[in-house]
Length: 612
Image (cartoon, rainbow, N blue to C red; front, side, top):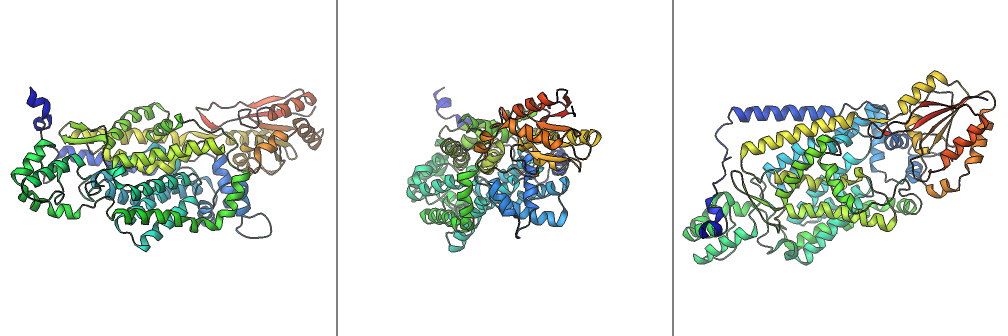
C-alpha cells in the first residue's frame, strides 16, 4: 500500500503511441478527415459575401483616399479615425490592384490569415516542439476566432502574422544575441505598434518579462541551467524535478551534476524511478543523451545576454514607430474609443471564451475542450497511455506562454481603466498567439494516440462549424435599407443617419440621388470623425438639427431616418430629432424594424416621414 502511494509513477505504463513503421488504417482515416476539415476551413475564409459594417467600411473609405495632395489624404482620415497606418497602407495598395468590392477587400485579410500559418508553425516548433506546433496550426486554422477575422476587412489577421514573426525574432535574440537579432525584434515591434495600438500592451508585457528574465532568471524558470523551452523536434524538454533526479543519479556515479539532460522517453517513470535508472547506468545515460542535450536549446539559450538583446530590440522598435509619434500624440488626446466604456477584469476570462469558440452553443462546447487542453499545457505531463501528472506549479514553456497571454489582457484592462479606453474582443488578437501555443502543447500531453486524435478532430470540426456560422452572420442591415430606398425614395429626398456610426456601411449601398447627412456633423456618410467625438455629440442640439432637415427637405420631399438609440453619446439625440420631425410630419411609417443582435451585428431601424 505504501509503495503504491509513494511511487505511483512506476505502476503507469509507458506511452503507447510510439510511431510504427507505417500508419494503420485508422491513422489514414484520421489524416484524410483532418485534411478535409482543414481544406474546408481554408475555403470558409473566402465565403463572406455580406455588406461591410462600420469598421470594415471605414477602413476601405480611408484606404481609398490619396496618399498625397492638396485635399484630404489617407493620413487625414487616419488622424480622424485614431488608427496607425501600416494596415491601411497595405489595403491602399491592395485596392489599387483589385478594387474595393466586398470580396476583394476581405480576400486580403484571408490571405494574410493563411500566410500567418508558416511563422506560427516555426515559432511553435522552436518553443513547444514539432508535434505541438502541428497541432497549434490545426487549432489556428480551424479556430472560429481566426475564421471570423480572416473574413473581416480589418488588421487583426495582420496582428497575428506580426505577432508570430515577432515571436520568432525574440526567440532568435534569446538564442543568438547579435545586432541583426536586435534589428529583427525592433522591426517586428515597430510594425506591431504601427498596426494597432493595443499591440503596445503586448510589447509592454513582453518587455517586462524580458527585463525580469535578465534581472532574475531563476524568478521565472528556477535554475537557469535546467529550464528548457523545448527541443525543436521532440517537444518540451524535461521539467526541473526530473532533471534533479538525473543529477542525483549522476552524482552517485561520480559525474558532475547538470552535465547530462534527462530525456523523458528514455527514462522509465519520473522522480525516484528516473534517479534509480540514472544510478544504474549513469555513464550509458551520458552517452545516450549527449547528442540530444547538445541539440536542446536552453532557455534562455544565451542567458542574460539574450534577454538583454531581445529587450533592447523592443526598445529600438520606438525608432520604427517614431515617424508616427506626433500623430499618435494627437490621437491620444482627441480620439480614443468614445463608443464604449472601459472593461472590468472579468473581460479577461471572457476573452478566453472568445478565443476558444465564441458565445454560440458550438463555441461553448469548444470552450470545455480548449480549457482542458490549456490546463494540460500549463501543468500537465504525460506519463504514458491515458495517465497525466498535474504539477500545480506549472511547467515550462506552457506556464510562461499563458502568463504572457494573460498579462497582456491584464495590462489592457488596467490601461483602459486609467485612460478610459473601451474593450473589444477583436482587439485581443494581440495576445492570441501565445494562447495557441499553450493549446497545441496541451494536446501533446496525453500519450494515448486515439484519444488525442479524437480530441483534435472534434475540436477542429466544431471550430469550422462554429466559425462558418459566425462568418455567415449578417453584419449590417445596410442591404435592407438600400432595397427599401431604391423602391420608395426619389431624387432629392433626405436621409438622416443617427448615429453617424451607421454611415460608412450605408454609404456603400444607398442609391444615388439622395441627400445623405450624418448627425450631428451633417457631413458625408462614408467616414466617422472620432476627433472630440463625445464632446461634439453632447453639445449637439436635436431641435435645431431637425429644423435644418425639415427646411432642406421642403414641402415636396420625404425624410428618411436610419437610427438606433443604443449607441453611447447618442442616448437622447436621435430620439429628440425624430420627435421634432414627427411633430411637423405626424404620419411617419416604420419601413424596417431593428434587427435582433443575435441575428445581425450592426442593427437599426428605418423610419419614413412623408411630406405633410
